[in-house]
Image (cartoon, rainbow, N blue to C red; front, side):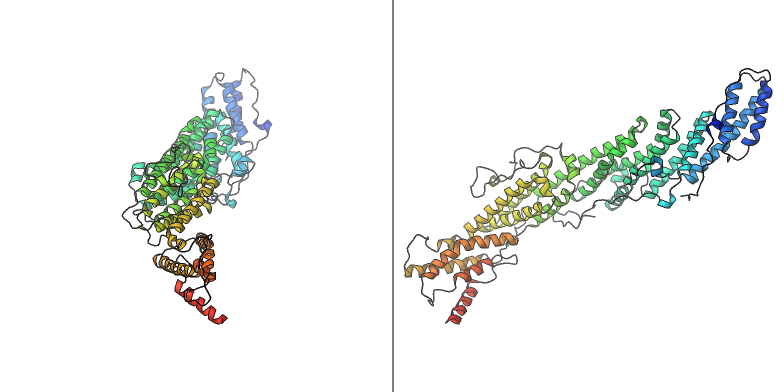
Length: 613
């Protein structure tokens, strides 16, 4: 790019200098007067156009020619005047070209407006859906840097000079020559600036579809960096400059010139996004690339619409709109493919032995959390993509809907989510249905419920701690928290039933012998639970504490009643109620079974009683 040099405006004639002299009518010596006029102007016009009166002299010559046409008998005089005017126009054309190339390679945005300036990650591949999300493809883009540095901005005087030359050339009948120079120079500037921004005229969409993904991804990233300064600065300034330079010309002139300067480059810019929408495969991990493209155009649409408002630049608006349409369709197809990937998760794979968090749960929720960061964009994309109002979709287990087992019945559905984000609720529903299928592989019913409680708690936590909460709503979170409690309650009821049944109810009077027998049954049942559930896990600390507290509230009072019914030191009494409370509090840690066995608790109890004695 050419360096800009300081320039002072030299085309600043006074109004009187530029005034067109009134016609004097037919004169007997008009030839002589015209020759005298030519003689007086010729030395001035043949000099380099550096005089403030230069434009006034050129206009005077043109006016004199217009007044004398048809009245001068000597055609040689008119020919001489015409040649002189051509000399002047050539000099003006050279000066026009020089200013455009040396002083206006990129005009100052703020000075053109005389007001404020408007400048204001890669995912790993999916493989059988066992992928890990390493990071987001695109974080929120920072404001793009101006194309030129502050010290390179050009003075407003240069814009004034270009305008005055254009006015003069148009007035003298050389408007086409003026516009041709302007269009050629400014079009090359636009192409050069786009190149410096990182955008190269793309190959056709068919070739884009043949590109290696890494190559295409790199081109998309370059485009994302270029599109904002291109729309907000480059094209916008070109429109303002064009409007200002050709203010005295008919509106169609400025429209035609700007269209020639910017239309093809802008069509190529948005045509790239349209081609990318076709070329990017609809695999789930590439949806973020599609969303970044959509978001960039959607955010810039008001500027695109304003800058390219002419009929002659309607193709630019059309390409931008078509890009949004194609990208939106691609996102919807990709989400459908993502849903299909969840549903096709292999049923042959064994469930998590500990009843902990399934990899499918982690991957799906991490993916949805990233998608939720594009909530504003997805709202536009999904709003016209209806979801069946009924929460009961094919393949969903009956336990998710009303009219089933009271212990597990709760509507998951999508009715509580706003319509525009119902697709998110549906994707979560599909995940929960798949988890229900996985849970049924457990032979132990208690582990079935523990698995569902663990995984649903993970889902609820992810929603509550991310933007998903704003998309699905508080009611959704509350409903599913209730479901977690139901699953946990069912786990307790099924997994600890023998322990609950080992002691008589609180209203039953028991003898010493009955108390001892109940303690033996209690100890045996507790040992059995401990052995059976060794390796089971409750991964969420709050859920683990809630289960332990619930068990303690049920079992410790019953055990205390039996404990109090036996004499101290009786061999049947292995540990105290406080030991049982501590044992339950340490059970089902994420690393495996309880932190202490019943025997260990009994040993502590014996040592404690020995110390007391």
